[in-house]
Length: 253
Image 1 (cartoon, rainbow, N blue to C red):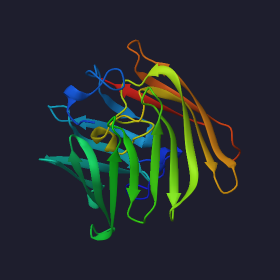
Image 2: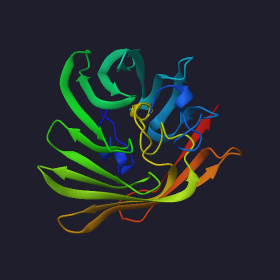
Image 3: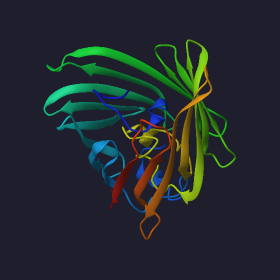
Image 4: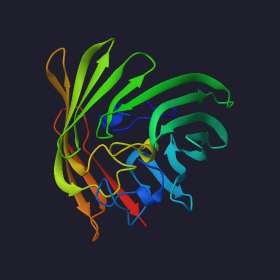
C-alpha cells in the first residue's frame, strides 16, 4: 500500500505517539525507551536514523535490490518526507498532527523521472482513550479498530463500499512491546506519529472473509528477547496453505 511497489508479509498493512524520544515508552505505552531500533529485517529495513531530540530522521530499506531512502523534516504540526529510490524522487508525503497524533496523511507517488503520478489522502480518528479507532482512505474504504481493556488492538474490521468485508483479529503474549514505533504493526514510519496498537507482542493474527466466513490467513508468533526484554527475533508460523512462514530480526542500540 504505502510507498512504491511495496509488499509486506504481514496482513497488518490493512491498518494504517509522539515523535519525541522523551515520549518513547519502555513498557509499550509510558516512560522512556532505553534503546533505539537501528536495523531490522522486517520490510527489508537497512537502517533507522534519529535526530538528536529523538525524532525519526531517515529510514533506509531495500526495494527490488535498490536502496529506498525516506527523509523526514518537521515544521510546527506537520511532518513531511521525501522518498528516494537511488537518487530519483519516488514519493513525497505529509502527516498532519494534532497532539502528536496523525489526523491526516497526504502522499504522492512519482514516476521514474521523479514527476508526480498519483496523490492519496487518508484520515485518522481516535477514541476517548486516545487510541486509533478509524482509518479512512480516499476511495471511501475504511477500517474500524477495537481494543481490549489493556489497550491492545484485538479486532480491525475493513469496510469496502460501506460493507464490512473482512475482519483481522489478534491475540497477545504477556511480553511487553518495548519498541512499538517500528515493527509488526508499523514498518513505514507512521508508528512514530501515532499511539501504539498494543502494549504487548502479538501471539496470533487471523483474517476472516465475511462474505463466506472463510479464514483466509492465520499466523502464530514466537519471540526471542535480549537481556533487557527487547525483541530481537520473531518467528511467524503460518497455518493456511499457500502462505510461507517467516522470521525477522531486530538490532537495537
